[in-house]
Length: 390
Image (cartoon, rainbow, N blue to C red):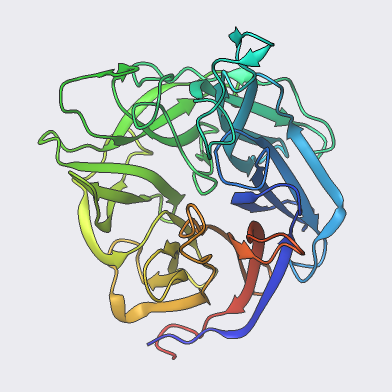
């Protein structure tokens, strides 16, 4: 049994007008922490907002609201979400994200200029459509950003309504290889909107870039079930010191059951992968890092009682034992009367030079005088005992 020490929960960012969720935390070469996240258009989770970040200069003990910055603003007709950040060895910061369109308003009017195509009751917007995937880059530590560049995900579908669109999460950080190549971990399916191959379930795959992230091509499939029963998505990917790539994947079983997480590994920089194997860990989605002592840490949301965010350590990243699981944060659900009251977690994790671990995630918090709580970004700082400790 592992017991974290020096545990400190920190409210990183909250906006009373906008739900904030699905974070991506990275440690910059200058020692700062950057916490990216999705800011929704309104009070509720709808995956159509804008990608933002805040910074911490003290290892996540505090987060400076004055550093808040929007990387790619929403517009009346488009948005972006599920941003993931990474810094490459030359100092460039890359952010990749989903892109959606056809938000509002409706083009159709009926009499007295009443909107004919308005959202149904209880919906904050019209139906959206994912129209692609994009990447942005910063050469000055995030102060300015390039225009978004479309990402080539072919032959995996890059547009359509979920689940047949390409996706990721804040934990799907780009991984840099020793030869300078970059891997972008994503999930999706072959086919276009409403036209996947018959019965196809989601697969995890990686794209590769050999020009610093300007262009991308399909490289390999990490996990796919040809029996069309298991679906894999929202993978956490890390490269170990010995060169092994380890992917841990959120797993679903038809028709609608969340299964334990599965893992696959690669010994050839992602060109080929082992057959996926089921772990004893239940939760989703995961993020993975190798700690300074060589162990591998997985963090993941836990959306059942008792809810919250959990972690587990492995000696080699390939064998995972439930006895090594521990609680990072308990709670975070809203009252069941709130739509998507269970939508918490999506953790992302880094380790500081002094060994402190900082895990970012979202959960519900009270929202002033408003009747319903709102999603906000949190971080938890903690330490882990050495291997064999408790």
